[in-house]
Amino acid sequence: MGGGMALATKTIGPLHLEDLEPHRFEDLVRQLLYDFKVWRQIEATGRSGSDDGFDVRAWEQETPLVEQVDGTEEEEDAPLAPGRLWLVQCKRERTVGPGKLAGYLDDIPEEERGRIYGVIFAAACDFSKKARDVFLAKCREMGFAEGHLWGKAEIEDMLFQPKNDHLLFAYTGISLQTRRRTLKSQLASILTMKRKAKRHLDEQGWVLLRDPDDKRFPFLDEDETLPRYERGRWRVVRYLGLAHDGLRFLGARHFAYLAEDGVGWDYAEAMNDAHPHRHDDPWCSGDEDHEVRSTAWGIWEKLPKHCQAWYEIAFVIPLDRIVAIDEIGDDWFSGPHLFVHLTNSETAYHHLEVPPAYGQRTAFPNKEHRSVIFPRSEKE
Image (cartoon, rainbow, N blue to C red):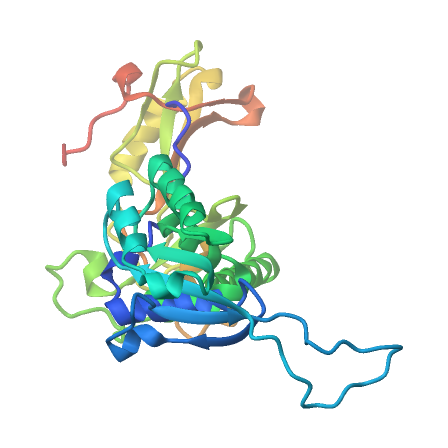
């Protein structure tokens, strides 16, 4: 078998904040602002058009001018401090370089600068280290006590916090909480199906695999020129048991040869003992070629006992593909019915095994080492 298979993972790609309509981007930044400080008031000034450089204007809450003494309550109309004025600018641009960033700060009206305590510049792009250094230096030069850059990375970090999941969903259509709930629900469904299979399916027993969308059941299509599965999407198969990746079923079982070195091998491809007989499968055509099987058995029976093997192909159906299990059956097939959407992507496992009575050996066949012991199928 080959080397390790790469692990498939699901990730969320970068958020396309630059695709938001400008006012929607301002709305997003303003709503993220609420948890940044304790605010007296936040104004969406950018929506009114002439904003004097303020997309959002906010006053940070300060302590009341009249403090409580000895635990006594002050009157409800105690005056509040005017608060610290913050300027928030939002730019939905793909790039903002150092010069452009400094230019935006220079555009703040001079008569407003003395009143401003802090500045937040939010953009739908990432900022370079140089741009960040220029921004902080410019804020100090203009006398601002605080300056914060919210680039794409910072905004994504805030949106991915559980408390902001509602904003993530509102502006991007992604909800991590919903994904977690969906995953939990899917896992619960898989475990329920696993327990039901454990209770109601007998290993080595016959089961009926049915496509729930095929309304022709139990009557096959009258067109006998069609392949069997196209005439009716159901089949009786032998159940082998639970596996790590789903439920395992027997797809093929052939007389086989396994050399003493465990490398050379061959199998009787023209016969298949995995097919059920008529008393197990009411849809069985009964046209098995007994002469072909007899010929293969004659060759197999003459092999050295320790080289007499079985070549088996098992296929696995993942638990999440099983729609339902009807353990009761019906008047056509009394065994369990498994409703499942079958595809051609079921995982198949091939192996050779010499029975325990002849010194049990197991091998995984390699086409390059196949010998010629049994006749080839006429289909090849």
